[in-house]
Image (cartoon, helix red, strand yellow):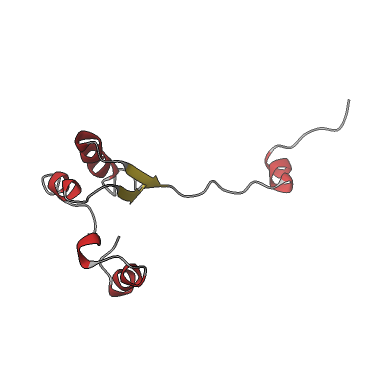
Length: 94
């Protein structure tokens, strides 16, 4: 999560203690991530941030340490019947 006061406060309001909140801005250095992950406890929750967000650098240390890693992804776009038909024109002629 980003280290902004509102987000840290929200985590605190949810009952997370100071030792349970890890906040970093941007990609962390590769040599920082493994010890950071190892100190995380029972599970790591991260988002699927892609290469720019250091996704592999966050997930690999979890795999190496045997720590479960929950990855949050964006929901798939909703496809309505109307949008589906617009995207795939069909001919009604025999």
